[in-house]
Image 1 (cartoon, rainbow, N blue to C red):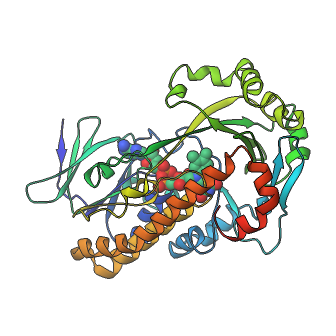
Image 2 (cartoon, helix red, strand yellow):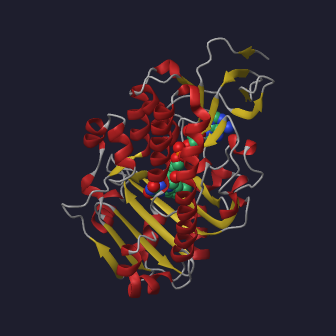
Image 3 (cartoon, rainbow, N blue to C red):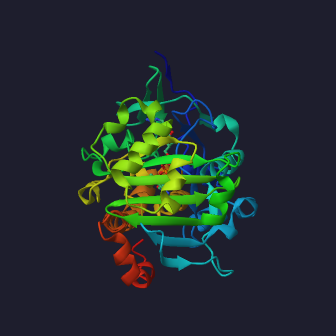
Length: 390
Ligand SMILES: Cc1cc2nc3c(=O)[nH]c(=O)nc-3n(C[C@H](O)[C@H](O)[C@H](O)COP(=O)(O)OP(=O)(O)OC[C@H]3O[C@@H](n4cnc5c(N)ncnc54)[C@H](O)[C@@H]3O)c2cc1C
């Protein structure tokens, strides 16, 4: 085990996901030193998750402030903003066509990560650096303990941008994320798949979601023209941990269809059957509303999913980027000598947003997985989308 303290920058960021790298870039342009730790062995490590839509007043605003909007625009898919909702018979329930005025373009998760990484010096990110815990030193600085036994010391502030299972959160609250009872099985229909051209005509640009009986199927075009499919429904906690290879098999897909989609139109179930199989499970957890506001803890704070993990409500990444924007602004204003003031101001502004986001996540889960979800959207979609609940 070794310990490194000399020349530690004042700020450590745990997590090179959307929120951590956005914060890193914002600190970079403000000339504030930092270091990022991520558990992934490399920037291209396989990870679930497809396309993300960035909103103008949040995600896009953070990228603009980071001086990255010109790099974002060519990667952003303005042509993929159409969204349709179908019932289990594949009848259209609600549709939002792609309109020129739409301003929530999609970007692939990997493309976003790459763009952010290219905007900061490589040596600012330590890969294969899984954080185990944080510790306060006798001089009240913070130490980061890595799973490989190394300890990095001497930080004035550690920012947990390490997602739903944040290790930094353990310093702040004993409250753990709770399982919603729901999972998305994520799979692909690659451009090389014989069925791909049928999917292009069935789904087209953007995304569609078929809903019914407490299950759903979300299908979304990606930047390279392939499609990702997400089959969502109720599963017992932990069922995904055993024998994950089976998710890729045709037998598993047939069983899933038989168990959950047996009376659904083949227009929908074909997308599962002829896909290239499932390769990732998103178990949906959420931080309960009692996790915020937390009592301020000097030397540590949280952004993004680490601060407020929710079920899908279409805003997770946007709020994550906005948290980083707000924290970077407060740090710049207060100065590195007053990081505690900056964090207190950031947290005060973030808490109400986190609570709203958690409530919207609970509502999203309720709506998309309700037995009568399609019926509900048929009758109320206009009001639901205008209210910003999803
Ligand atoms: C199925 C699904 C679909 C979604 N679709 C959308 C969408 O369309 N729009 C949207 O806005 N949001 C969406 N979200 C939510 C969105 O993905 C998250 O809100 C967003 O990724 C949060 O970013 P983050 O940087 O805070 O956390 P993460 O994206 O979770 O990044 C955390 C980073 O920390 C690293 N890390 C974790 N633990 C450690 C550790 N111990 N040590 C070191 N590093 C660590 C990870 O490797 C990762 O790089 C979706 C989520 C799911 C589950």
